[in-house]
Length: 258
Image 1: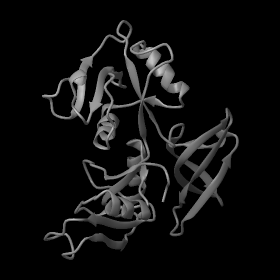
Image 2 (image 1 turned 90 degrees about the vertical axis):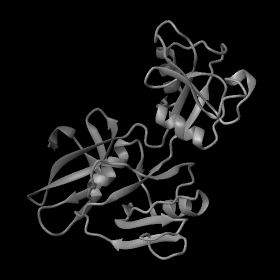
Image 3 (image 1 turned 45 degrees about the vertical axis):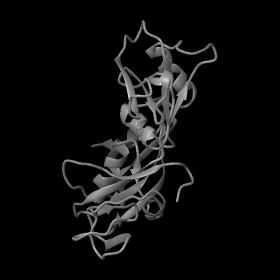
């Protein structure tokens, strides 16, 4: 299990997905498909309770139950397992997000960043502007900050878990306070950045040659040089067997993109 702070969650999708689609769906959501240990930790320490079986990274199907109920397995808490399903079957998926949201105030003081400035300072921290969803998750996990900051959509908001007079007043319930959209060039605030170990990666599908047959690879490409990319992923051949590949493709022009 990763030592990075993070959260396991069941990804809401419009339809069920196979294992390869599940991996990509988590990545598209800024996360990665959860591992068995991460799901167990979320069940035991975070109280995760979900009566929906979902893919995990090892190809197994499991779901966590803290509040036993009818139609959700035995009447005792635990992580239920359906074993290993054929990878082409359609199910839900559990993702693991290691995104960390943090407020940032520049050295020259509070409320001095335009939207463009906010983008730059987050990049300098090897991060990106946080989304509202990321800030809301951070608030749920206890982030309490009274200075308003830019978010990726151009709104200005701040998370309050302990209401107090200078931060919206004592009469308001805890929540994420919003100033709404602000002028990106004229208005100045602080910023909320998000940092993730997945930042800098991009996923794509492509085909490459293997023993005179054509195989498709799904994986994450890490740019090394302009003409060299490294890939880690599984090769899904036309034949029944399956191969996994880890290595560098050089030059990139030799890849037939699909």
